Length: 98
Image 1: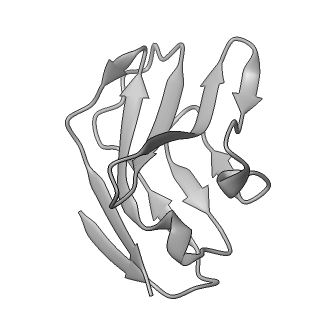
Image 2 (image 1 turned 60 degrees about the vertical axis):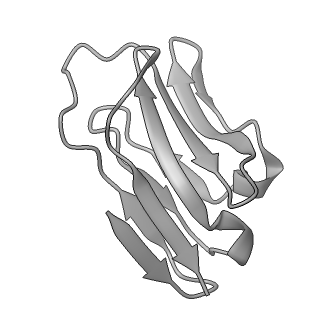
């Protein structure tokens, strides 16, 4: 699932098969240089946005797993993956910000 957006746009990624008994969600971004960062995570302790690149612009719906990132910059380009209950899902979401 590839998406091309412009700087300042908003993107949403929506995983398909999400189990109703979700106890934790972690979204990750792999940039073109291969580095991987956590975008946003949710568990019993609530929400956390560990990387400043995504702080204040990222929201997660813990029921559906959908992530929204507003006010995109080129640094948000990359491949996004989701871990549900500590297990990486098959789906990949590619984002290119131009």
